[in-house]
Image (cartoon, rainbow over all chains, first blue to last red; front, side, top):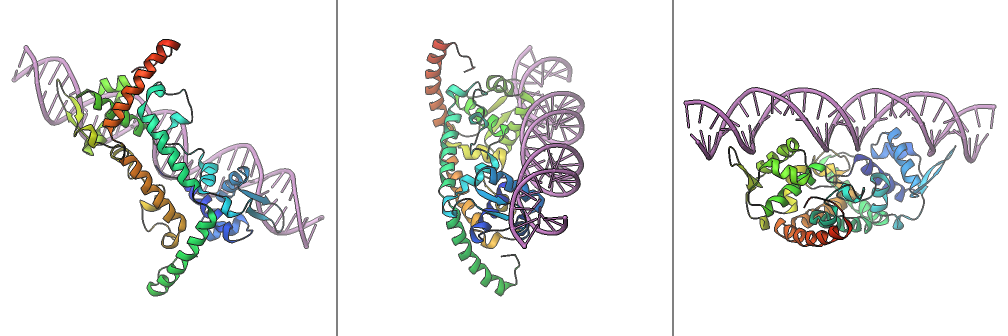
Length: 151
Length: 151
DNA sequence: GTAATTGCGGGTATAATTTATCCGCTTTAA
DNA sequence: TTAAAGCGGATAAATTATACCCGCAATTAC
């Protein structure tokens, strides 16, 4: 029941871009503790999904393809992990012989849809705002306790 | 974002037991199209989680440890797949350096909790009732179309 | 008390997926 | 023309999921 690390990396990258207009993969990778070669692959998926736009060559990098208000967790999760569905039945229909009368199927479908809706209700502009607020708090906390962590 | 096949098998087994008071692993496996050796492993987990009670020897088999009204999807999912959490951060705290100020973390935690609550709201008595209703419909449908499938 | 049945638990094999890295290529701007 | 940056294909390594097997322990019937 977990997202993959790829999904995590992707969300962090988009969150980073919501705060910086444009950045190179290498920069994002460094800031977010992600192996840059791997992040490059992830960015390709995000690019193919139309979430980011890439620019090659000197002075290149990646930017969000649309304002962060219009990018949701669902967009990113689906770009990386495929459709949000709790059961493989939904992804390859006709596979399960119980399909036509399965109460579990029906229930999981409903819960999965609700889950997808929850993801869709979170956009990256809000996340960036929240992060900034949390970050402020954490900064104060770090000064007091000597805790560490890139911000 | 999917449950594993194990989770699926486990749910089907419990649903089966909600309709039959007691059954052998082999019976359940046959009826639900599950490899019986594999199901045996899954039943062990369900047993250790206190969801089913097992009885060895002639005339043995497994029974639900409590009435199906009191067994939820969450119980079964957690017994098989571990805690319902969308991000590994929640399972191994202290791993992520961003933990203390991460807006994504906070959001996923919230969504994950809601998801768990949705699972907890579905019990197997209700599922069994729904299945019976769906099954009736499917039976009629099968007679008309010649479709197949164990019921 | 012996035999048949049924689950227990440990081990192993296979496959699939996830994570990560590498390298030659294309595009782009200076 | 060159250096920077992403593209895309290949592959390796690690982890997890799926499945099977076997001897053992418990239980019941005879």
